[in-house]
Amino acid sequence: MIRQIRRAAMVALLAVAGLSPEMVGAHGKVELEDDVCVRRLGGSMVHLSAYQPQWAPKTEYCTEIPDEGDTFLVIDLIDPKLRAVPIGVQIIKASSAAPKDEEGQTIAYWKPASHPDGVVRGEANLEKGLYKLVVTAEGLSPSYYILRVQQVDYSQFGRKAMGPIVVLLVLAVIVYEFSKTGRLRNWWASRRT
Image (cartoon, rainbow, N blue to C red; front, side, top):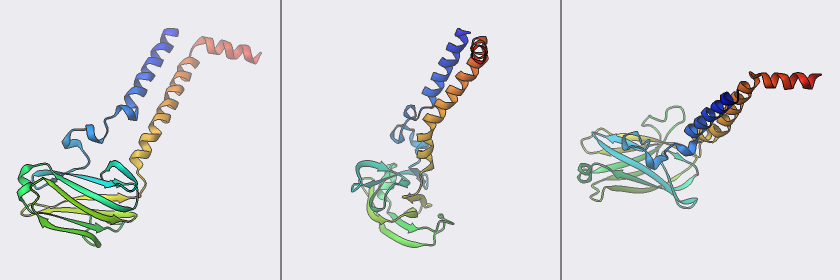
């Protein structure tokens, strides 16, 4: 019986350790192909980073931007072939019903230019809402990002809630396993009499 409880506790601890948000690799520790900030521009890859130094000087964002205001956008041209191609960027305030549409108010436009250093830089003042960032390259199909500014980040909410949920589930399993033992039944019967 004690062995079963120990085994259940070890399995529960391993499950908690494996599912813990801290154990999952952060944005910077994923493979390039799995990075949510990487898009294909034609057959080449680009990486988006957004910064808001007035709120968090050293924090890098991607498509979930937590605050309104001046936002510095940096697009890294991963493929060296893109450095000689004129790259343009357009930021469109999207309607919440159809953020992928081309219609909407253009917030910022950076004229196509070549970027020998491999970095496209720009700044935009973003208000709360949805935006479509369109990256175009001469002769290649465009790529786009949907930016959410000061919107609820359900993925972050889920990561924060995962720890307490896993702890509750582990406790429920331990209580259940312990309730199946004769010792708990005997203790409960002695308390009732």
